[in-house]
Amino acid sequence: MKTKICMICKLGINMDSEFCEFKHMKNKNEILSKAYYHITCFRDKLNGGQNLRELQEKANKILDLAHMKVS
Image 1 (tube, rainbow, N blue to C red):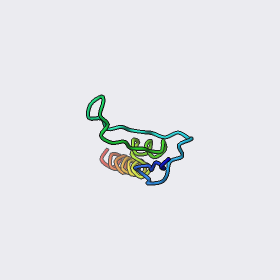
Image 2 (image 1 turned 180 degrees about the vertical axis):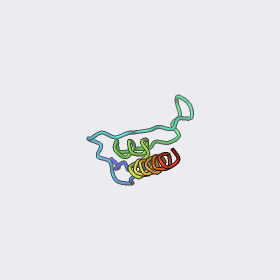
Image 3 (image 1 turned 90 degrees about the vertical axis):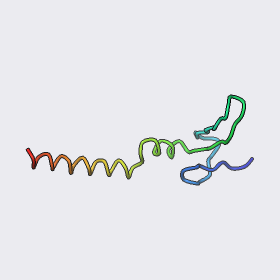
Image 4 (image 1 turned 90 degrees about the horizontal axis):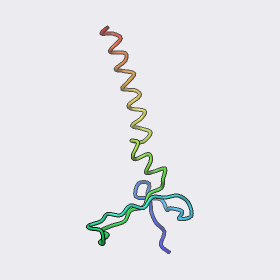
């Protein structure tokens, strides 16, 4: 059996553990493509990833400081 590759991190997927399989369907009978993801990679992608969360925290701190100076 061919190894499935995560479309985010490009590493192999252990088919004995949790993973995501997504199918791009043209209609109910025709599959256009399939994609595989590690659960953690997909979760990070949906949540915006760690870098985006850190950037949001920094932006919120800057906005809080600006609000304190204006008030």
